Every structure is written in structure tokens, then in C-alpha cells.
Length: 602
Image 1: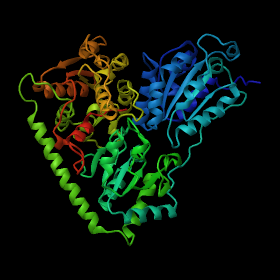
Image 2: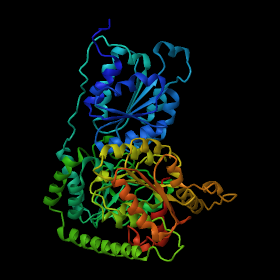
Image 3: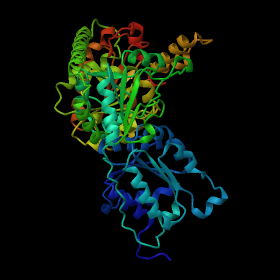
Image 4: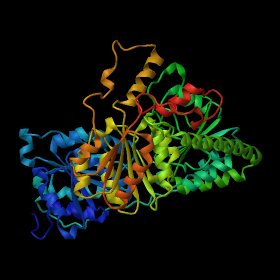
């Protein structure tokens, strides 16, 4: 029998949300969710409801909020259409290890057997991209469901949880009262001593080791430990491809950028090394094409050592000589100490490798400076896409606030990662999923999470921006200070590059000109689109005016308002000088160097 003094189901849900420290719920209103949304308006729940115009925007915003706040994000969506609409960013959150709680309103419990309008098996739809998915069947199981959901949201691997809740349960009262508290698991566990010793021995004996860092490094805040290890070993540091964080300080000489998204490219980058230490790597197969006859994704000669807090990721695709399970920040110091003390550790050889790496970095910095000096050139000259982040980096030096960059222009990713300076791993946000349409939604949650403490800059391609320009409705409604740099070349540049690579790999030509990969006419004026949402902006067609436009935009954003700059960039493949490449080693010729700048997600 229900107790009359027990809380309603919706209030019980919000008790858990408040206990988790979640400040915002993002959503698109549906009839079934009205009681829950109404609960967010009560002062005692200490949260705000942020309406969006599409469910994928809501989940993207929750994703951005979760990453920047360090707490789970919350999205409230509506039955089958809402669940279908969130798949892109639910997938992005799942692949990027971002904890988002999706609460989906379901039809009335007693009606479900009749297959009513809009109803479906929501758990089956969303479940493959959730750490746990469940449909609540009775008001009295709700406390157990919520306790389990929040426990899973706060312990690695950090991934989304999806709950389908029949709307009548929101207005029922459970038989037993509940505290609204959930189990928090202390998970900073140091790796097994035997594994630490084995890892240290393998690394100490390596002739030419390399570090491959993944999002687990940024999640653990392990920059200092990786920096110390890279100098200790004299090891270059690569990142997993399309990382969602900045997993190593990009102003340090050992940073070499991300692995290429091609099998042959990865082989060229790693062929000179003998041992690879994969630390917190989640995305191990971010390539366009795989051929069994060409060997494994990582060169077969590499001795592989893994450290991760998720056993699934250790040796998942490759045999690991050493597999070490443990919290990265707690375990790395023990590995470092064991390497230093190992009898096979050769300090002189590591020092020589460091000297070579530092010399390469000096040449790269000189190349970047030279390229910056050459821009903008003569009037009417097209704006190369890679120059936009380089110009922003110049403006960054004059800013009083630190910068958070949201990146959804994969074609110019290396310049965004190298030129702009980042003060911590989450100062850079991308997604490992690669589903387009995340940056404009994510910037909503990011701006709410960082408040006025940081300057939020979203760099997005025109094709990606068109997925969700309706995000600007929410941005303007809540006066969220975000600077949007829209890279407008009237085409899907990464797809054009992908086509060129398919042509090369398979000696194949399309039957007709690939007009469908170009946006063409009607052309888009993103400043004009932003104006329909009452957001100020401008169009830049002349490189000589780019810096002053970015400076103007930064001032508007620092004043607390959003601003959109539509930058007409050179169509086709921009050709940065080969010296700007983040690798400079035998076997990487100019053609391969250009691909490092132009390859987007598969």
C-alpha cells in the first residue's frame, strides 16, 4: 500500500539528481514529461530546465555540461521520436566516455500492452549506446533503479545511462520512503605490483619507446605524470585519433599530434619505434579502411604495454605483452619509479632521444611562425582553413580569460590542436564518436558549466553547423557567451578528402562528378542565420580582416553575449607547408604530410 506521506516518483528522481550535484536538465517538452519538468521549477530542487528545439541538442548540451562540470549530464526526452532523435549524440557520449542520464517519458504503464501511439521498445533502441538501459515497471522498483543508475554514472567507465519511465509512475508514491542517496565507489586503485614491475621492465629495455595517450589520461588529470614519463623515456607522445580531450600539453616538444585515420598512415608514424605504451586509450580502430593483408592496425613489430582503468580496453584489438589495470594517476608514479630504478634503464640514450625531439619541435615552431607571417597576403586571396586557428591563437595571447575550444572541424584538427594553447585536458572538447552535429549543442552545456570564467569558442564546419543551427535559439534565450567560428567552404571537405583516399586505395573513380559532397547553392550566410535568433555576427571574406573580426567577437563574448563569425575559407584541400606537420621523420613524404591535415573521421 502506498504511503500518503511518501514522495511522488518525480520528486524521488529529482532527489537523486540533486544529490549528484546536477544543476541543469536539458530537454524538449512532451506531455509525458510535464510532471518531471514541473519539478525542476521548484526552488528546493536547486536546478533549472533548459529547453531545446531538438532532442539531439538536449543530449549534446548534457554531454558538454557533463564534461566541463565533472558531474553527470541530464537530458529529458519524449518517447519513441525523442529516443530516435538522440542517437547521434548518445553514441558520441558513449564513445567519448561521458556520463549522461537520459530520462525518457514512456506511455502509461497499463496502456503499453495495447501498442499505443508513439510507444515502442525504447530500451532496445537506446540500449546499445548506454552503459545500462532499463524501463521502470513499478513505482516500488524506482528507488533501486535510481540508486543503480547513479552508481553506474559515477564509476568508470563513465558512459550514458538510459531510463524509460511510464508517465504514471512520476505521479505515484512508493510503498517505502527512500533517502535519495546512491553508492559512490572509491575507484582510484593502484595497479598490481607484479604488473607495474613488468611494465617498467619492458619500458626500461625498449630501444625506442613511444607513448600513445587516450582520453583516460585527460579524465584522470594525468598530464604531469605523462610529461614526466615522456622525458624519462625520451619518448614521443601521440594521441589516439579523434580524442575528445587534449591528453598531453600541446606546448611541450614531445607532443606529436594524433594518429592518422588510415592503416598505412599509422604504420608510417610508428614504424621506427619498438615499444608502445598505450595509456588510457579508448579509440583503437579510428581508421577509414582496413586490409588484413597489410597487418594489424598498429605495426606488428611493436611490443605493446597497456594501462587502463577499464579491462575491456586492455589488449582489446592487439596482444599486450603487459596489461596493467588500475587508475592512471595512481599507477603511473609507481611505473615511473620502477623504470628509474630498473637496471636496464639507459638515461644517456633517453637524453639523446629527448635532444632529437626538442630539435624537431624548434623546427616546427619556426615553421608555424613563418606561416603566420605569410598570412594574410594580398587582397582577395582565399583564406586557408588552417590559418583560422593560427590567427585565433594570436588573439588568444591578448585575452584575459582562459579558452575552452569546441572542435567540429576535423579537416583542420591538427592546427586547432597545435596552434591554440590549452591549460588543462578539458580546455579542448571533441567527440570520439564522430557523429556530426555535436558542437553547437555541446557549447550550450559547456557555457553553462564554465559560467563567465572561461571564453568558449566553437570551431565548426559549415556542413556540421547546418545540423543544428537551431541550437542558437537556446543560446540566445539564455544569453550564453559563445564565439562561433563557422568555417564556410560550401562543401563537406572531410568527405571530399575521403573520396580522394578511396580513389587512391582502390584505384576507383566515381561514375560522375561528386556534386553531392558540395553544399553549393543555395549558399549559407551563417551571420544572417544567427540574426534570425537575435544573435550578432559578421561575414569575413578577406584574410586581412580576420584578426579584427575575431577580436571583435571575443569582446562581445567577454561581455556576456554570443557572436557568430562566418569565415569564407578556401574550398578544396588547403595546402599548408609540409614543415608545419606534427611529424618529421623518414618515410613521411609531402603527400602523407598533407593527409595529416586533411583527413577527417572515417
